[in-house]
Length: 336
Ligand SMILES: Cc1cc2nc3c(=O)[nH]c(=O)nc-3n(C[C@H](O)[C@H](O)[C@H](O)COP(=O)(O)OP(=O)(O)OC[C@H]3O[C@@H](n4cnc5c(N)ncnc54)[C@H](O)[C@@H]3O)c2cc1C
Image (cartoon, rainbow, N blue to C red; front, side, top):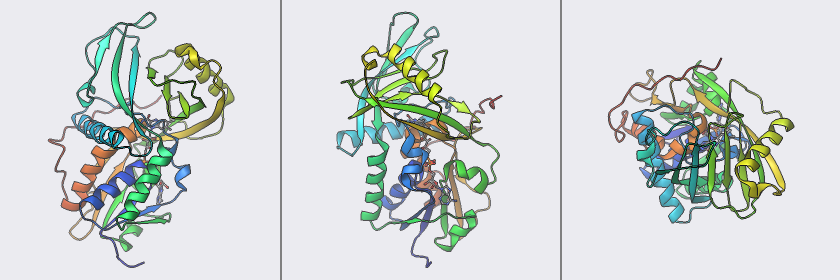
């Protein structure tokens, strides 16, 4: 293959595609290599609601989340396929201790009272995304601007330098092997899809004692969640878990009681101790740059456009430029 690109992005999920589109907007000739059919990526499975799930308080993550919130809201207003701003009610079980650390990233968060067993609720607008049409729109945007998409699995990251002098590693869970990074681990997630009986508001009960619980309406269906199982690395069906998710969600939103089940989705969130890795690889030298962009866990959609801006800075300038001073990433406790 000839070097017809400035940057090759490895990965056609939401992290790779938003990085590719951003790089192209900044004038780079971009090729994306992706190993799997887009329908088989974890990005397609995602409930894809803006919310920094299981991310620790961190200035850098807050910046990414804020930039992404702004961009997705702009896209919702502009009619981008699959993107909608949804009113959200987030029910709390612990005594209310003030706005969460991520509150500055959203436009309109307010706290209010809630009936027991809840102690309070947060109301805010959350951009939500239907990933199949959205990823198709990103691919179309890239190719319309002259970018290339090639289905090809690289064996080693270095193989991609055959195509371009700058490589972006956005391979999600596969980055654990490709970048020899032992901090990467899977977090299994399970969703049930039901017909939408007319719901328009997202409802979350993150701390439900039986497991994370949420109801996210979309145009034609409702996403019921879920599970968050660190270290579980298979996607085999589990009817008992699906039934339990449905029961919890009907308790939360009784209008769902008779909603027919349309399907299930199971995926492995690409998590990483220490948070997402978005940085220049230390092996980069003049003429060859390797930028990592992986490990976004349960928040890849939520952080996508902010990360993409930083990836573009690193790939084109060799340094982060837009997200302010770096702070050490906090390290969550490894799963037992
Ligand atoms: C049940 C569930 C619900 C979720 N809900 C939300 C939510 O509400 N909000 C949110 O923000 N996030 C959510 N997420 C998380 C989100 O899905 C991920 O953070 C995000 O999709 C990660 O994107 P990615 O591009 O890093 O990885 P992926 O989508 O896995 O993409 C990786 C890409 O790399 C390619 N690749 C891998 N190996 C190679 C190779 N050797 N050569 C070339 N290409 C390669 C793959 O083919 C693929 O194209 C959810 C996840 C799950 C499972």
